Image 1 (tube, rainbow, N blue to C red):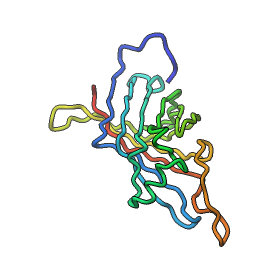
Image 2 (cartoon, rainbow, N blue to C red):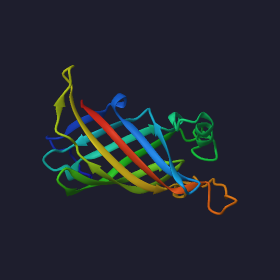
Image 3 (spheres, rainbow, N blue to C red):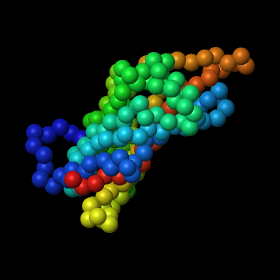
Image 4 (tube, one colour):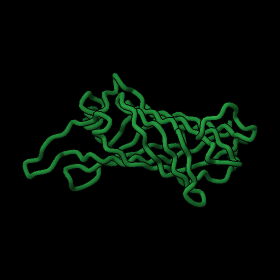
Length: 185
């Protein structure tokens, strides 16, 4: 994702398909098991350079107000000022700064993740993109999966509660996983 003065003529622009994409997370609860959740409302663009994937770039956003863990009370708490403060910071965004090939169909994509008003560099491990395929409506699609682990406290999400038995209610490490489809556009 090196910055260039002019885009190569071979680039392909792909628009994220929110109906066929997901952003999921998991975090330890009471230090004994993972709680999982998801977001809808994904939006993004992948600018792919098939001749040199390291010159590709991606920008994406997630509507944090759509958080769902299967428990409306917990979802409300996550949207509150204790965690996402979704009224003040309704979006989580990512903008790539570098792409490195790590294997066949595997990349490390580093970029700026903004969450809760804080921007930090993170690296997603990416599988894909898949080979392009046509859908029944004539659109060309690709898919990919990506994951990263962040410490939520690095983004100002520091609320917690001590347990009587020792330890904390909510873990600090959060794994974020994306499974996304893009439409050539």
